[in-house]
Image 1 (tube, rainbow, N blue to C red):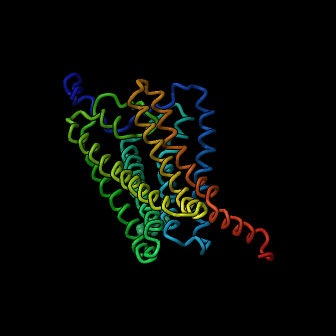
Image 2 (cartoon, rainbow, N blue to C red):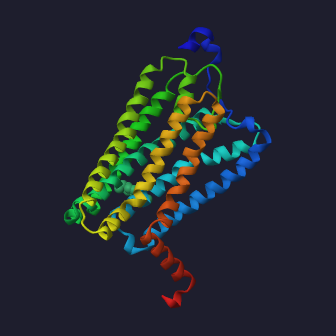
Image 3 (cartoon, rainbow, N blue to C red):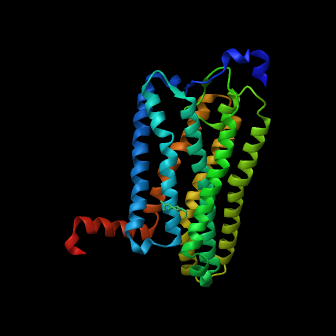
Length: 320
Ligand SMILES: *[C@@H]1O[C@H](CO)[C@@H](O)[C@H](O)[C@H]1NC(C)=O
């Protein structure tokens, strides 16, 4: 709206390329950032592939929790891959351009994965709730079919909501400066380029955030309140420790995911410079997907056992 008054709309319509200003201000240091991010990206891909492979190869890990974990790792691979390669290339080249179509594609993939991840984390919390609070009915409630339906519903929400949201945003006319002060295409800066009334889009963004990002978070908190109150009634300290340990990996992943998202949100709200905003989102986008497989493989006895077994089988087949 602000644009339509001051800029002759017709002359300045953006139809071709956008410029992601990103980390240009770092100058030569971009090469250093490139190397660091390259290492992180490779670790993320290998770590998540390792988790998928270990779970697929080990029959002892064919339980609902690990079914969801495979789905989560699969998601993380797509999430980072929708952004990291473009960011890495942009750190090396002068011309940091992206086509409008490329920008749309990136936003489709990253937002679908983000929303699906929130729903999937809630499904995993529900799985832990049933395991601890309804142990006798666990196998009936969390049947293979129920797990597939919960994961399927997460994907359904992620895809349908975000396809609608992003398609709507990209049906707006864009004009004004094609320079985006960010290293990837994200909803807020892209909405700022629109030279139409975006208030309805902003309402949709807010609604989606409340229903599909904060909604699952409330369900996760509720599950953990019920889990903790059940576990505290267990008489023996050993029993309590065991029950908590089956939830600790999920708890850490959720804390990390929502913790970083909250820090990003608060950081972006309180900071005035695009430079520090970018550093904060970088943490959220690049670092978080790397840590999940590390948490699950290093913190989890069952996965560590499976890792030892698989590596042992490959290296010393005759011993096993
Ligand atoms: C994730 O869950 C969906 C829905 O149940 C399923 O179709 C898909 O195969 C799963 N993906 C992986 C990699 O397991």
